[in-house]
Image (tube, rainbow, N blue to C red):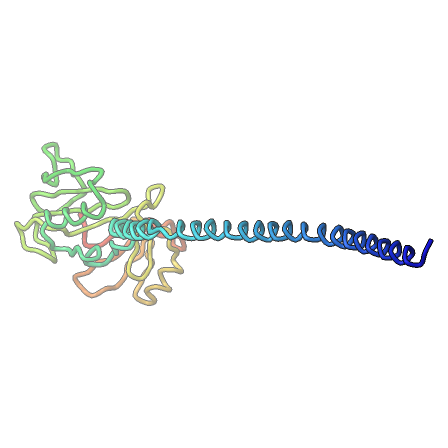
Length: 259
């Protein structure tokens, strides 16, 4: 083989090597471009999913802002005010047993007016004699030897009030008026009435002396055991005891019948 032929074959071999080298370079560079497209799509997918929760949270915050609880609380505050007006004091805090009265109902008060006042506090009486003579046609006394031509006796639990048309320390003859009461323990003290000094049914002689001091006197005679309180005239306050050192079983105000 001549030198010229050797140079031609060498040049052809180099050209072949260059062609294969170029093909290899193209093969190596073309697969790397495909993953770039996949990454770009994934990025787009993640950006679209982040926008959905924003609309859901904004819609839930507007629902609780309602005005219904405000109207409910305003209506309930007005109801309790009506219940306090119906309360009333018990008789024991209104009716005070005194030597000339039962609290504001004075001896000498017009009979009808006094009866109306008692009924407003105590309700209807358990019994009412109406206006009757002190002594009936057979000579029997209706309520002891009461003065006047007509008397009237009303009774509530433990309490008896007496009215007359006779002349007394508190009214003229012919005037029908309240002049005596008797508060008596039968079995139970249902009304709980007391004097201004706190003496009531069941109080002891020690209670009497503590309340009235030297103005109270304990007496025992043929009529029984009783106490009497010295008060300015024409007042009268007294009552019976279970014994000289016993307890109070009755409280009387006024002169009464037969005294």
